[in-house]
Image (cartoon, rainbow, N blue to C red):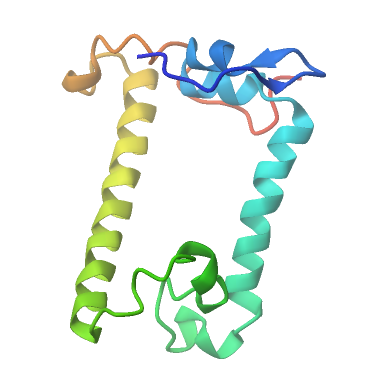
Length: 142
């Protein structure tokens, strides 16, 4: 559907959001400049480090709860929508969030399969945005 932000993702490299919306997901990743890719990966690594190392006793392999990101509580719920919820309501919302995450993983796997093996996902068989290669090297081609 080519919905995108106006303007440039990277004015220095001349990459616009419009250009990214016109290609497939892996080509879009390869169009992002190396420093942009590193920023994305560094952010993910920072969150992983914080969740794994800042609370070692809360690690899921040591009896902690998967997805318990106490250090981000004010980050993701700044307006305080969950303050007035009961524990049962919070548990229900957590289950919903876990299910949404699983559906997102299925969606990403479907996109990977549809771009790698044409026709493997019938619903995505003629999707115009799924063009290009079925995989991407982490930092482009060399």
